[in-house]
Amino acid sequence: MTSEQSPDTPQLGGGGDMFTAGPAAAGIVVSRDDALNTVASEALTALASAGSDDAERNYQRALAALRERDSQAGPSLADAYRRLDEDRYQERWAVVQLVTDLRTPAAVDFLADVLAEPIPEEHGSDPVHGLSTVAEEVVIRTTALEALSRLIAGGSPEAAAVVYRQLDSDVRSIRRAAVQAATDAADADLVRRVRERLTGTDDEWMLRVRRVGVGSVPQPNPDGDPHAGGGTTIPPEPFSK
Picture 1 (cartoon, rainbow, N blue to C red):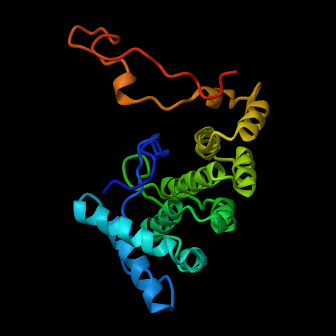
Picture 2 (tube, helix red, strand yellow):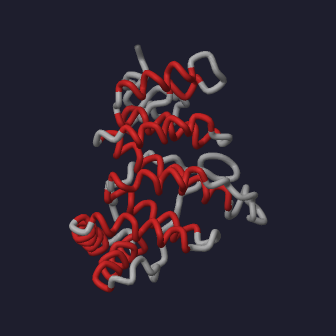
């Protein structure tokens, strides 16, 4: 299923940026309101069924129905998230992803709470080659940053403030995702503040990270020339002066 989530949402793992959040399991109780719970469950079930055309249609239909009940849907999803146990990583991610796609302005406080949660110690027995619980937690938070980026683009100064605070995170990948969120939102004031904050620091390299389409990346050829066989045009850096 092709959701509205950016294909460049940070992906992490114990050995590097190789982890991807998986689909959610159905069956999360979102609300005591039967009608709201049904449509939310349909959306989460569609996330769990990623890959089929039917799942995409069902997801978009459920999103539209949830947007009609925006004032109820946002708080109900936030409450559902808080009721989930820590180790229900896929379900927690799915709720945050659903909030991301809903673009609910009232969700800023919930997303800030998600980002404020301390990341528990690693529980995976082999996080380098297998499941990394820390990576799962980080993906949940980078998805929250994507949600905030969309809200900033929609004109939310509260969302911009939450993203800026993530530059203080102890987790490098979250700091990097915050920079990307500011870039994607294209908020001139936030971009300026981020640039001023990181210039001259160990994180200054994050200002030069930019999205590159597959067709723009030079591809290797059988003769070993890494610059042959692909495009060579690199888009301008998002923080260029």
